[in-house]
Length: 332
Image (tube, rainbow, N blue to C red; front, side, top):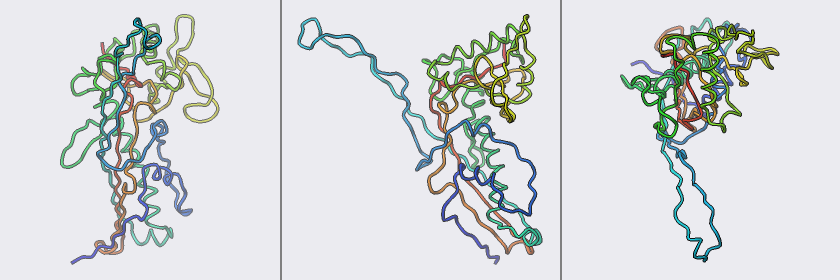
């Protein structure tokens, strides 16, 4: 019988810690290839929770107040005003893993700490998987694998033709964000005026309380497409301002709000959703399981002359304010 050596982290790593490890240099003798940034995760807060059954209450309507007089006056009888209402939202967790084989020659030549180096390299792709699920998870479960509820899929009711996502904020189910049609299939509009009108409508639809922290989210191709849009006077839709989307000293605003480049977002296409607008920190949270989010083990027996390393980690998401985000839908 083959024996396996295993160990469990005395202090399990959260996704936040994995992201820190991804940026650390743990071996000066290994030249790492460039890896993509995780701009989306920089826009979303993470919280630790005790259970995969974590729930939160979201206020859907607030208490209304009315004028009254001194109590006791026959003209100042009070009655119930409109009360506050809550909706319960539930977390959803998935699991990601990586398993690789590291030869003894590599370990010897590089003088690396197998555990730390493997976690460093694996954590970047773990975060890639998390970003993909936060954007495009369809909530399905097959062969024991649970997918999350992606902002650009399950969270806008894509499977049902966006029917719930078309509803206004006070009518829409708490689990869905709102989509706004561009009026043109595969396009933001037929011309510059129509494009600006669409994005102005998207901005106007967002409640004022979220506009202070609102941003536009898109990939680099969409950004370059919109960079070419200008009206009949030559005024560009995008305005240069501040720190850039790619780094340096310059960036762009659209209708007064900054643009964030997220490489994994969709391009323009029929029924495409290439742009989001709103306050992501208010809209969604990433969840880590407190004290039990990851597991690491190595096997130096099964494959002679090599070490098999295995790492898995749990991750989750939960809806916060479903009126804090708008999604542009390229449909007529």
